[in-house]
Image (cartoon, rainbow, N blue to C red; front, top):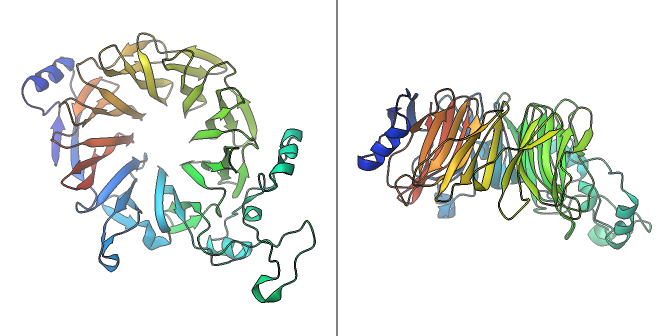
Length: 443
């Protein structure tokens, strides 16, 4: 698949229906090319505004008589780098890209190293959040679960009990802090293409997941002992330190980072609410306070969009300068809001199928109107990309420049094209077929 695509390239009545949507509009043209190796399983592509692309890949491994663990691949300007060759180890997953940097979840062998040795391995990065100031309620909980609020290395501390050559047992109430031998769990890693290094930002920090990165640093959700959920952790690039955004025995999930703010959803004891955190000022603000769930926040330039459930059907809400507004109107089961420059795109059910809806800062319009599902929109730098089941059983990738609102089909085949991402006016996605999957770039 390669060439300049303008308008829709699908045959027959489907093509006619699609073209009718764009009547009178001049659609933008794209050049589409494969950027991954074609004999691997490639998935979950992400792209930054600099044109850097990262994805997960499994490839044939003759030494193992099978396939490799999940690798992280980094591509820019035709150059492809496997980050496992740069120091990442174990099965990698959950990646995000910003500028020419990638953060992802992976594993790092410990081998019984001390904290200082761990930090030396990680290039001098601070691997542990500082001690957290606990509330009275949390102190009471700590008596029942002593390890609940320990920082990273203390959580993996081991009391020697005379093991390893007859060492003396530490005094009562003290622990000898060393990392556990072998594989202690997952870490958040960061790859900077400027110096070509992979460094750990954590040391088995309570099973980190869903990392995001940006100009200010990186963030992720960090698991606590069951049943006390997750906290949000932030790595500050300027100060080169890792800190917990909040200490909470509930669930703080789904962080999103942009500029010097991050947002997440947090369980307040009754339902999920939306919170925003200023990483420079260290100020945490609760945006919502109601009797229903507020989830899936998206952030751009101090504005937030999210899904709320005041009834059984999801609605889209928008927060700007302290004011909250419901922006979904005629649609139901609204999901996947994406905000950029005060504008929001999401998918909603119109009574027949899922369509895309668009809030321009003033009013909401129905962006697509057809007889098939349009889902999983991504929105950045004036371009929307999404999955469209125009052919029936398999999805194609569509794109739309909001300046002309003319939709363009970026794929045309009989296999599943999925998981689009967009930034810098470009689109990447995963195309499945013949037992393999390929990453494509449209620019």
